[in-house]
Image (cartoon, rainbow, N blue to C red; front, side):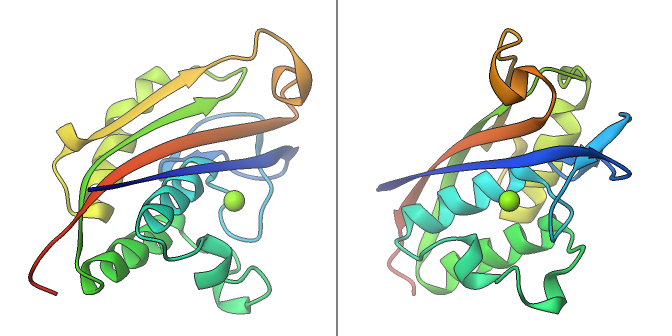
Amino acid sequence: MRIGQGFDIHRLVEGRKLILGGVEIPNKTGLLGHSDGDALLHAITDAILGAAGLGDIGLHFPPEEQAYEGANSLNLLRKSAELLRTKGFKILNVDSTILCEGPKMSPFYLKMRTNIAEALDVAVECTSVKAKTMEGMGEIGRKEAIAAQAIALIEETENV
Ligand code: MG
């Protein structure tokens, strides 16, 4: 078995949709980014790629490439999971934490987990999404950014 971790942070700005875990969350500001800015899915993508020793999201989906402008990050996660499968890895479970001061994330956990499970081709029970505030401290506490952390456990399979 192998383990990987991922982290991401994006700025919150006006005029962008807030998308986390592939779910559009009603909010006055959204995450700035070349893609849809989904920091949670980017952290999870880095966690699974890292577990397999396959680099990171920027290596496989370069931000300077026009193809990924406004990209749905669920597609990037799905493609990364497919890459792991072709390299002979099976994803066992993924845990994650969103760092944000608001809005409340818990109403969206199940939909996020369903999206993540579908992209990874694992059961919803093998996914986890949690959230923490920063108690008003720092750029996240001032609602200038949202960050996410993720960890993934994978195993090498025989049938490559
Ligand atoms: Mg990102």
